[in-house]
Image (cartoon, rainbow, N blue to C red; front, top):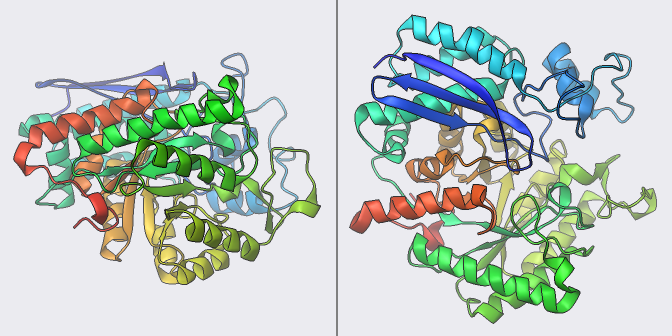
Length: 472
């Protein structure tokens, strides 16, 4: 069935920042998709197009990088942004700074992508063809012409329309696109303590997660996660006071602690208090690129700079090994900077745990290929907005799985009520998803959709459980 109309608009994400929403119409009705946005973003991600209008929505960190990507060829941008003496002042007029609006991305959809797709008379079942058409129209390596947020919004809406055209649930349509005969419910990785760029505390490492691998169903995993979350609130309140139970961007608690082991101790205590020590393992997202400075790592990067406290990648690896030894840590994401390849490879070779590439791989087949070749990690974090289309996301997943990697589907810290990734993780059979704490509606929207999917599947529902790393 052809596309009758596409209309994009500016809406707001969970951090109060503008983002892109797309309405796509066919004879079957209206199909709506919204695009998320990250806080700790890898420099190799596809470009999220933002406006250059200083009068709208103020500004935020990493200001010139997005603008620079729009004006400078991508390979040169990468070289410049990795330089220790990097400055954009000589390339970008001082009046241009990243401001949060997405009117340009919306305009590119409404004025260019929408007419092209409606006039081409393409069928919404032709996901790959439609995505390729948009990529060809953009014509850049990192989608800097239209923006990944523009292309992805349309791509997600097309996928939803395709499912309706076939008369099947979205997860089944995604499974068909991926060539998967079965579907699998994932283990949720609840981010219950927030640090790094997701919280205003001093904690350097970004996410401390609990994975209820001992649950027998997704529904039970949700109950376990919620009970531990509420026990954790009481543990934090008893130790640090009521003010310490404020939450971060992803719904996890953000106590003002500095030591990362202290966060693990809090988790260990809360898990035991809830009675689930035999059912829960721990995962972490270090987001080490956020505190990588001059070839070393600053675990107190939110305090005034002091090079004397920086540590080497070897020392950081030793710290991770102590975590694995002392706590049930089974998964560590982004343990090193996105370009510290040697450290990644050495650490992955030294451990049996899951080592997840996010900033390292950015859901990009070229980066994944290098990581496979270097044996730099053994799991892909799949974020649809890092690469910018459904087709490329499916290709990245298949590439990772065919090389023996695990795959974890992920949200972004700036989320919407869109639940696409819940269906995505089921259809791709990745066995694991992280989409925040069991708190904040934009996070629970995904978890609640997974509960509905499990109920709909009934006796045919399969839960990844202990096999979350390799469920198929």
